[in-house]
Amino acid sequence: MQLIYSPLSPFARKVRVVLAEKGMEDRVEMVAANPWEDPESLTRANPISQVPTLILDDGSALHDSPIICAWLDAHGDGQRLIPDGEAQWAVRRLEAVCDAIMETGVKLRQEEMRPEGERSSTHPVRWARTIRRAFDDLEAEGPGGDLNLGEIALVCALEYIDFRAPYLNWREGRPNLVARHGALASRPSLRATAPA
Image (tube, rainbow, N blue to C red; front, side):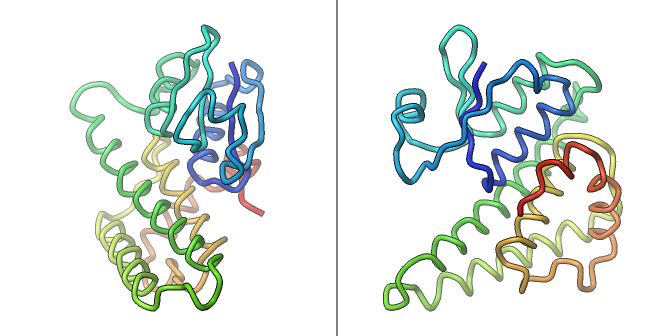
């Protein structure tokens, strides 16, 4: 198998964490790519040119981190990261919220990269408000910290915001988020993939 990824993509990081947690790192060749350059290795497997993209042994490709993570969870070893039955929906909902935080953080970063005269004055304000609202909602859920795909996505989202938009300061007034982050952030899989 081959994982096409960008080292700073929070979505690719989530997949890399799952690879480690499921004991599959040695089964996957890691191929770094810049999706903005539309490399042929990526566009051939994923015409949308988004990372991560997982190319399976049969040559087919999986796109989108939730699908890739679910596939890895079903085919790897160790503890299931997406539980069976009704319990899966809470984990999947948390993953979706955290993916939305990451996506909004990526939008903020893309806006910052635009030439100064082309930047929106309204979109970043709205996106920051959206992220803060999501943080508040997650804080209201109380402590978590179990090892599952939702909590992995939470750590990836929080640390991506730390990396790209530290002014959003998710720690301030959110002790439950701090505790949830602290419960998993020291795991080797998360330490090894932290954005830098």
